Image (cartoon, rainbow, N blue to C red; front, side):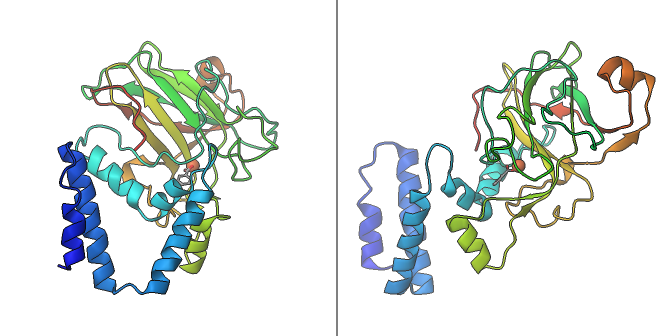
Length: 291
Ligand code: BEZ
Ligand code: FE
């Protein structure tokens, strides 16, 4: 080990909080080891500083290029795996992503999240239950959903869409049921106009994410669940730009002919696609933690 490495690690000896001390000292050690191993040149160091500086300059309230960088480096999913994979009965979690908007309208059971005219689209019905690990219904859970429009853009990204389009919150019913109407999501490309875009282009990597619907499910006494449902057979399921796909989150949809239940319970009198998925939460603190 170089003298400077030892000195730099030791310079953090006085940190009182033992966890913070480990985090900082191990970080210094890992960075020094990396630089030593690759024998970093002065000009390579300058490129790195410039990249990190420009990444920071792109960040503001509406944009977080560092989280996107963490996502494309696989770091977000590694943090997810370390923190959320211990409990196998719980529905797996995945990346939060940058497109969540809080306080979207609370909608009625089976209401549509589509606010634009979509005459040519077959409606999608997503329904199921929110359950605990014993298979019992969780009543009153809040299910926040968001997804892209047919053009691959989220409201907030696309000035053509009302901000509440393809978004909403639902409350689970007496047997834990939730249901909402939408359209099938499409695969789309993550933002490519910043430093992350430069990195992916330089590396000849693509920007695509497989089609998915985002969910954040919160309930008193349960750990919040941040996840997606991915649509089966999407061509990017095996090449998600942010490594977010987990097999248990991939779902098929069934085409339904007009039928009595669709009409009576969901106000669907035409042909529609159906996704049925039950989410399982685990008991614990209910603070929202989107890591
Ligand atoms: C998303 O699914 O919305 C997303 C996740 C990570 C990076 C970019 C977008
Ligand atoms: Fe997304």
